[in-house]
Length: 160
Image (cartoon, rainbow, N blue to C red; front, side, top):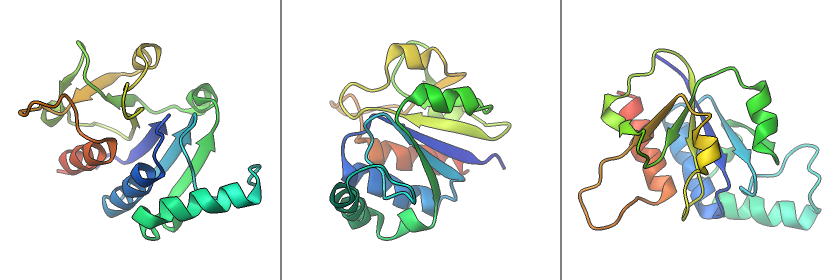
């Protein structure tokens, strides 16, 4: 079975990040990459002010419930720094003219699942770098799910 790496780019909410950590750990995600302004748990050589790093870590822990200590994660301020080192195909979870239904995607090898900013989604220039764009079909009036809920739906579908 293909292993999943999550790439969380420009996600604002510490609670969404914590929830994604918890869900990712439950589905056996290989690692989580956090980039842009996405909040992240305290790092060994953290450059943030200690009280800021501690506050953000506690907020993430509130929904992660310790999962942030079980799953490997890395932070890149600039997503391009990650993209330069990444050799895996990037698969975005986003609504797009190029998107295919989530249930139709069968990963053949390890991949990176990209989740983007809560309100505006993934930037078009970043979508251009994705091998595939997946979409969760919507039946209701709203156009999208909360990013942590969408992550759970995608990880469940991809684990089948």
